[in-house]
Image (tube, rainbow, N blue to C red; front, side):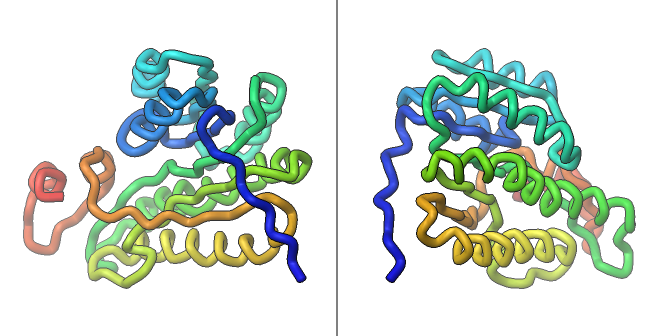
Length: 217
């Protein structure tokens, strides 16, 4: 029989958040910091990351990096382990990007860019921080999928593929971690007011401009 460990409240524990320069990552950082959590923040947008860090009153460690860079993820995880004033309660692998286009018209480079961030970035984050959580015997990896990870949507083949992959990866990991005290969690956000479409790469089959697509989203 698997022993189930009751998770501790997240408020007050250290959290790691990727994609923290804007959108859900920034909101999550601000919310948890307001509840007493030290926050370690990652994004490749240095200016946005600086603005997020400046908006937080409390312990904050921010690092500009690309989540596709496995070695930099491991280096920052080691820095977090030495800095964290409280146990790590959760690692939010939240960074993600967006591509929308008919598959026949998609640019291979755009797809590779998306898959590298949305899949490899999540896996790199789990690889970097899971050993720390297992040594603690507590905490969670929280990986951001999407409602597009639950159903296929036309003109979003690469994005859906990446979010289905995050869902499957995390679900498999969840079973592996049973009994360790560490959890693996997938979240599936719906439409939210973020800059993901404006910062994404799109080729609309109906001829709408990038700005029109972003505004509609």
